[in-house]
Image 1 (spheres, rainbow, N blue to C red):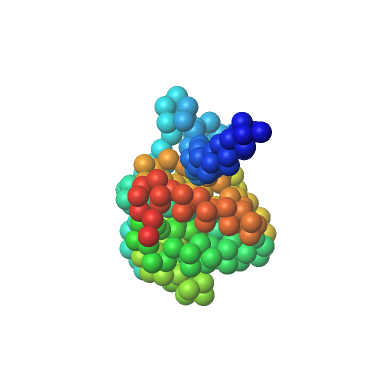
Image 2 (image 1 turned 30 degrees about the vertical axis):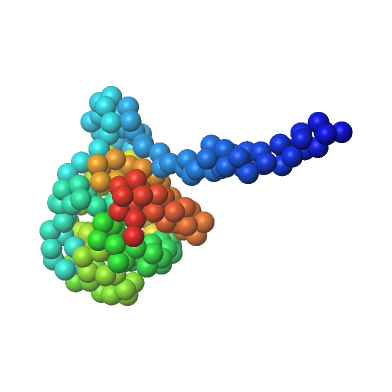
Length: 221
């Protein structure tokens, strides 16, 4: 009887130790954000140069709504969210821009993050048009950049830079084709995720994974 009581007492005393060991082993957050194209970028959307090494977003030079030149080197210093849109888009773009407002609201006070929204209709989307569109969506200057520039360079950036399908509508808003994806790029210019900009749950996942990257870089506030 005494032996049984002793065994029960030992079991009771061991419970906190077992709980501690369980939490230490399994309770840590092991969620990580994947790295895309570690063996190079291959795309069906164009004849894009590639090799078998880690793919990095290429350089570019575009102009934002404040008539400032934004270059690819800006990706070296910030976690960046990129999408492609056009201001006269009759379908998915208003939804995408509204969802991007949520991303801006979540991180607007963090200087380590930026948003780049690139127009696939740069002929129409002048600096002035982009400025009006930015104001409509309450874009913060220096945080959310709406970009325009040379059409050929933009389409190459979309297809070969971010592996996103893009088709020129030649001025007809109903004929433009572009992806609804938001693209997450880290400070090494590696692509870390694609998220539907028309799906609230997907944008919630984007916001979560941005926070995880901030922890990876020890930049969480």
